[in-house]
Image 1 (cartoon, rainbow, N blue to C red):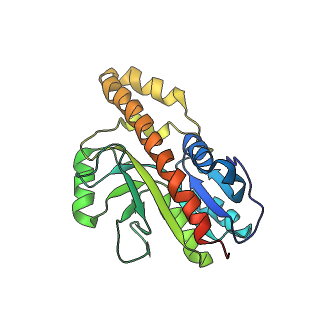
Image 2 (cartoon, rainbow, N blue to C red):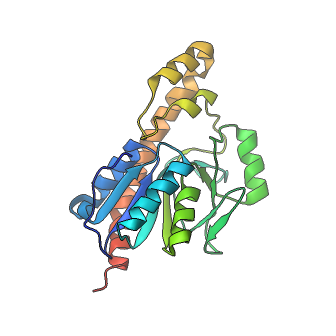
Length: 226
């Protein structure tokens, strides 16, 4: 499942659902000494697993759920490292959350083609796209809990992602090198895009951790009855 730590069940804990192990570790580092008041999971970039794990977290008695990680930009104004904070998520089948604020689009597959990103932005108005937030939002909705999205942009609306990245993550959110090496062997011209994505991902993760250092403790205080 990708658990990093478990909070003592109670009203002060929050559940943090990530797609990748690297995102989960950034969340724990951001919380620092408060990490024992959160439950962390990594879903391996799957909305279905994110929803299942979020439901398990809800059963532990958390006060809120957080979708925390990196994302692709649909809004061309967003740059790599920009952080989007949202409480509104939509997919092809559902819409959750507040009527105002940035919209996060939940996809079942990586949206890596710039033309597809542009078309999705025109059709939905969504600022960013990721693979987990709609699963988290659905679980929160069923439980009657608030949910929050904290996502840093790792690829902007103009960046093309290699198609083989769709198979580059294990179910518990760890990198799979085999599909990447095989993809490079088939399409060696994608190497510059892959290198750029690596740099951009590192930049996004740094920005995500900095945002988490402020946002995650603030969420804990928000649900502190004192």
